[in-house]
Length: 318
Ligand code: G3I
Image (cartoon, rainbow, N blue to C red; front, side):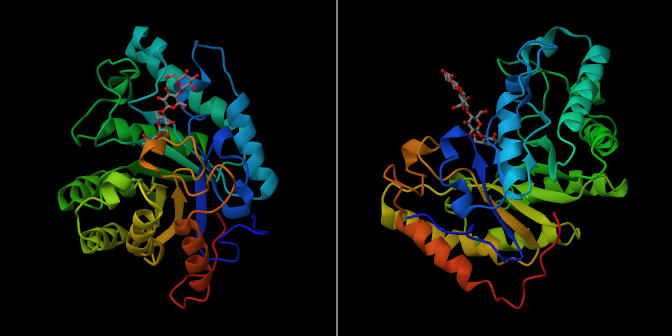
């Protein structure tokens, strides 16, 4: 049965979900922040150079805005799902195409709350060439002296084009590893020097959070990231559910570590209905008949029970 208000209504933190046509039904009954799952990926928006297909992203944006939910633009720069036509352009034209893309997104969506500027820099920089990589790292300055010039350039451009949005970096397999956290911090600190970054994104997919890494490791690395002074957003949490009981136990073990951390300002699940990326691992929370799996019922009650947590900061404007 549907709920009258999103799960985290009245909370100091956002509780969002990836949004797509598969995820639309019942979305507003549970979640209060929207991240388009695939509609904001450049290759999907501009499969042919100069021919924009805005329909799906428009729909997601208007869904968010009509409900008063913050909209999280996933994603500008990523080494995957990039238009293949980028490969054929020389770097100076690639650079112009990147700027034109940022400008077009900014013009069409004047009220973006969060913009994910670079996704997965530690794993999938847009270099070289593969089926879905535009290979344009050099157009943004390559590695440079810092090792991360291309990321810094992307954020400088994003600041110019999206002066009112919170600019985020995003990556996976960070908090389960001290070494990855350290590498992520290097990039974040370079961006902080120029005041280019407003928040730290952490994907936290099931394979990371439910891996055999003690939750204490995740918690300690959350603390190290929080020491930057930046807010943290869990951007893509999902937890497999081969059985209801296994999913419930993992949710109870994993979710509070992120939700209760004082510097985690929101958690976004990577979808909740069937048709998910990890569908065959049972990562969904609502069955096809609309009923809740036990992990979702628990999540609802747990989030309600944390509403009066004294540690929670007052609600912040997005
Ligand atoms: O819609 C087409 C369909 O028309 C076509 O017949 C079919 C054949 O392959 O593909 C369908 O598109 C698929 C799309 O998902 C929609 O289901 C793509 O192949 C498939 O690559 C795409 O996968 C997405 C993946 O990112 C790659 O972009 C997943 O849905 C999406 O959940 C996943 O999300 C990523 C985040 O963006 C970044 N972090 C990791 C996360 C999980 O991989």
